[in-house]
Image 1: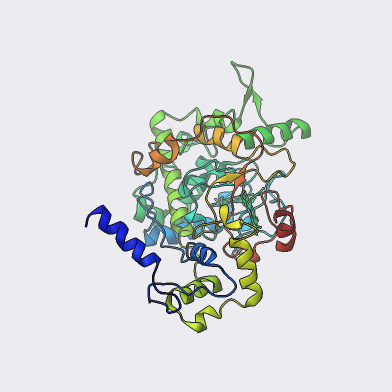
Image 2: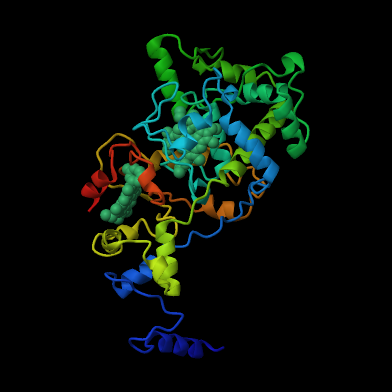
Length: 401
Ligand code: HEC
Ligand code: HEC
């Protein structure tokens, strides 16, 4: 078909007869305008999850089952007292209900839900991680969260008959963790410029104890015991341990990819707009329809909370005062991140992962930008914002409109 003919067809469709609805035209329910109706159609349905080529196990059922075990296993934390599920509690829609998460040391941000996290482009409020599987590796080694290390975690997996068997059935043999001094009980690389690590070091200095640490024998700077132990491994053993650790992240991501929720009353309503089915249109009552009109019209919420996730997947500064630099520090951390989708730990370092991280803004961000959160199921995940400052949705809307 020529370009001209295509345009002609479009023009015809646009001036189709008044009154009667052709099957391809959506119903515009009161009180939405045609433009608001068009915007509503863009919010639903939530499409199937896109594949993640950087994780070869993303949709592997046995990996998802293994990942689920890891998600709930407290033994993977330093003191065997917390799991991912401690903060991301399934009974609370995978959040903790707290304003700010409660970690081993004070955390700075509010715990987001994991429902639909697999649909996000960036992980964390500041987007400092580009892949779901690599996000899972961060809390394990964060001194504020699990405070564990890849060596400690692999010792637990290797010593547990069920975890070991499941791991090896999916990923092949584990490194020989039981081989005496070759693999010390704890150890990991400790990036000197890591923010969580800096906070922990400050805390340890203040309380004169805590996670401990000694002056570096050569440089005189802080030489973390985890780093010291890690430095005793050969480069080959370091690579084997890190590879196995990465596999745990890929299994957890396979589990998290099952935590998707799409069909809400709003989705049913939009189906009604598409099919003309009155019962489906009734899924939203009048107050909700008036709210929707504001959302898509005068209040312009859709500008940032658009698309099927009700998020543009980008970062904005809403002008809240606070000291959290948000995306600007997130970008610095992302550039240094050990497990980028373009790294050698990725199963597809040259594909879309490249596009995602090769075109990051180079200018300095000013202000405090945070990721636009998805508003799907938002009613069940109070409190709100990166710092949990609002207890209810009413409070949010009062300040945003
Ligand atoms: C101490 C509480 C705590 C623990 C334990 C914890 N998390 Fe989180 N999680 C948080 C907080 C707080 C954030 C947001 C931090 C930020 O943005 O800087 C977060 C963010 C996330 C995100 C990003 C979601 C998004 O929308 O950006 C994912 C995914 C996630 N956690 C998964 C996990 C997994 C997997 C584990 C276990 C390996 C885990 N978490 C352990 C508190 C916790
Ligand atoms: C300029 C982009 C933008 C616009 C316009 C916007 N938001 Fe947001 N919204 C955000 C960002 C960014 C956050 C997170 C801010 C933070 O944590 O500091 C957010 C957070 C929220 C949250 C909290 C969700 C959670 O899980 O914590 C709700 C609810 C919300 N917005 C609703 C609305 C509504 C309703 C409107 C229209 C009145 C609106 N937003 C307009 C960008 C926007």
